[in-house]
Image (cartoon, rainbow, N blue to C red; front, side):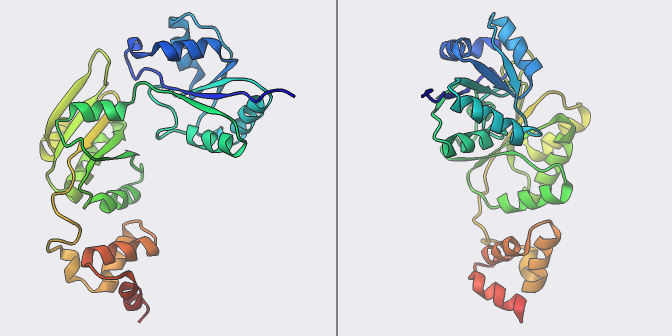
Length: 279
């Protein structure tokens, strides 16, 4: 009977190729197959280190059927490395589904740690690093993005987001509107030649990027709320309960989440809010 293969989750550099680990190189050289988010991008990395291995694509739009094929290869005894374009796979990445499928099939999984843009940005932020929340990418749709930020409005931990250059300006404006003028660390092109870390307020960030075109990939590290949820006089509290809940529904939340958020704002039990909505 053929032994089951192993899936290796291999972190790759987020910019500077010197950041790859010796263990990552060893694994990439010895596996039977490498599953990559973008095979062309990964091929450049492999060529740089003179590694010749078969590649297969595994990304957001083919993860369903390709994941099944990768699992079949693993069950047939092949050892496979999973890599993303940069950094640690599975984090804000379609590899999450592959991990679940491997667990369901009792396939061994080994992590090969390395670079992670979120952690790198956090270390440079000069903000509170004791506790933080990694959110990843916000929705590209305005209403959904606003609803996501509303849900984070009272989070006291430091917040970490990924953002693309073409969405950065609007995201900063949405954050300013919902969070107020908090401190933010804007990290661009981490570990690359033009790495830049800007530490200022959201208002200053908006002004800066109105004059400077956003370029490269961004990590945003935002200070948490200094006030607990529902601890101050919000205009929402002047509304009726029904209008309060409908405000969140119109922002993109489903009814259940809107009721929960309303209850938190008002410091009231959810059952009381449900009762108000039914009456």
